[in-house]
Image 1 (spheres, rainbow, N blue to C red):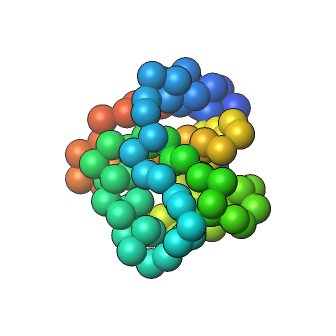
Image 2 (image 1 turned 90 degrees about the horizontal axis):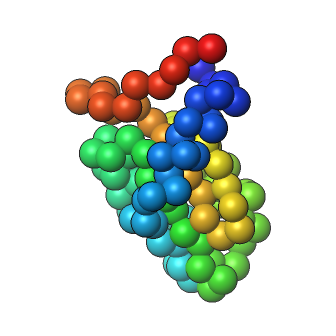
Image 3 (image 1 turned 120 degrees about the vertical axis):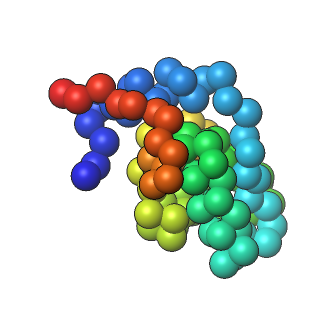
Length: 99
């Protein structure tokens, strides 16, 4: 189920305090990068991803590729940074408000 605007706003608020934990560089988005992303989402649920200028590809496409590959939601994107969310299957810690 996609995130509502209220939920995205809540996640963006929490995400302001986060530092990027995954950095996409000149190697781009590869299978190992997607596996690392999945592990980070399972551990943290909400993460920031930074795209370096050397990543080369369109950042919007890159964010969509990450979201589809990791089956997560894009909570926000500003410049070269994206905020991704996926609730943990084993240990959910973030409880989102319902509309």
